[in-house]
Amino acid sequence: MIADHPEQIHLFTRTSEQQAKALLGILPDAHWDQTARLVAWPPTVPDSTGGAVLVLCAGTSDLAVAREALLTAQYLGRDAQLVADVGVAGLHRVLSKLDLLRTARVIVVAAGMDGALPSVVAGLVSCPVIAVPTSVGYGAAFGGIAPLLTMLNACAPGVAVVNIDNGYGAGHLAAQISAPPLGPERSSGGSDA
Image 1 (cartoon, rainbow, N blue to C red):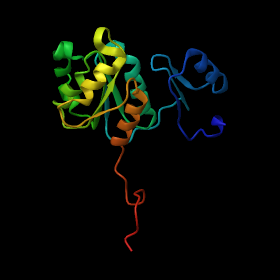
Image 2 (cartoon, helix red, strand yellow):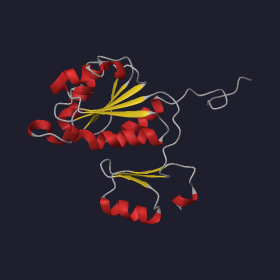
Image 3 (spheres, rainbow, N blue to C red):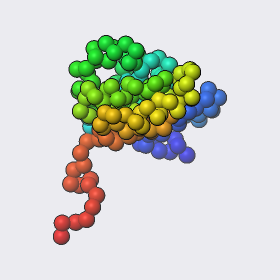
């Protein structure tokens, strides 16, 4: 049973309201973020280690996916911060955050529509950028296919792409990239003998 392992973080993603209520019936102190559709138990975010993770979303319609990435990184022990509504339609909004962008060890960018924001961000920073296409948008966005293709074809170096709406995968990858370096006692591999 989950409650028997309070030392281990449990994340339940893509939870509907009905599923979240059922989980809260079993784990009443669990944290439920309705926007991210994520339930976390234990509810307390662990102490942060490793480098900073920055999560950006182009528009507020991308917020659910961005919050899923943010909370995943936080519950995996990273110092993560969200910056919302910095899409390329108002490039000045991204540029006004340039100093903050350059403090991150890794940046997650959730964007729908044309999916251009990850490439723009990657052109401004030297850290890895994880691109998350979202299924929001209208017209020729094709449920996230258009931003996915744009992100896969990014000309800026250092962009990795996860699947459409995969905030969990992006947050997990960001937590791995920003993890503290392995010490000799934690590293894997053969002996020196």
